[in-house]
Amino acid sequence: MSAPPPFIRQDREVLKLRYEVKAFDLIAYDSRLTALIFYARTVWWLLKNIWTCDALFIRFADVYAFFFAIFAKIFRKKLFIVVGGFEATWIPEWGYGTYHNKRSRFFTRYSLQTATKILPVSKSLVASPKNGFGLKHRIEGIKLLYPEVDAAKIHVIPNGYRTEFFCPDPTTKKIPGVLTVASIRNKKDFILKGIDVFIDIARQKPALPFTIVGAKDSDLRQWAGPLPENLRLVNKLNHEALLKEYQAAKVFMCLSLTGGMPNVLSEAMLCECVPVGYDVSAIPEIIGDTGIIIQQRDSMEILSGVEQALLLNGKRARIRILDRFSLATRCQALYKIIDKEIKYHDSPRHK
Image (cartoon, rainbow, N blue to C red):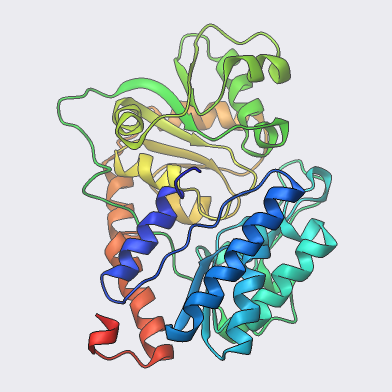
């Protein structure tokens, strides 16, 4: 059983600072049998704990959120759902998003309609007019996919980051090079996270080092053919090792075609990487005027963007994340909304 992703563990710790929290790890499954087992465990956990709670809090409006929504409705409990991206984006040609499957679409719709508050991590997940960057069809935003959901329940609370951990190392010299980080499990990830374009850019800049963290050599060769000599591949890293990669890189490139609010982009910027990214989802909102925002999926524009980024200083990138996306900012926003709904007071039960 794998540990929950860092952003889920982080929200859990944030909530524990103010409330009494009973946590349950929701596990991804790979077969119908394991799905039924995990669903049964979820229902059993809810049955045991629903009686003493004031509210339910869950990341992602998927099938697990559907179970939480049923219990919240039956037992008249508050329900807070954090929307991260997959449940508010639909890319038909790649079967991406819960909206693509009718059953999953029902689970997401019911969860969002039942929720007391819906907490997307970026404005783009509410409604985004951004283009598809070469995709035939792409819709992003709760209002666009689920217009029947009460918009008054939606409150954007961006992800927050451990600014004291993700920071530059004064003893590490930035090297002229380009880094990207993405978990690549299949060809869909390879395309939607822009790794195909990243490799193509590396081929066109043979004198510049490029690094991909999160992909296997055998997988990339299967989908991209022979890899350029200036491309370095690193398998999945722990947070400490990943930090070193951020601290050493001059430029961080985010060519994802979807994803809500890419955590790796903000983490890299905190380490003073100059960001280069597509004008899609929350990427331009994160980058602002501290890096280069690519308007089209065009190799010449991307190459020009990389060359411009190499001339910039990453200090302003860190300042932007400190000002807008600190963990303290997320904490206060979450507390404000939850306190109001559960009528929080500093009693022994809530400590």
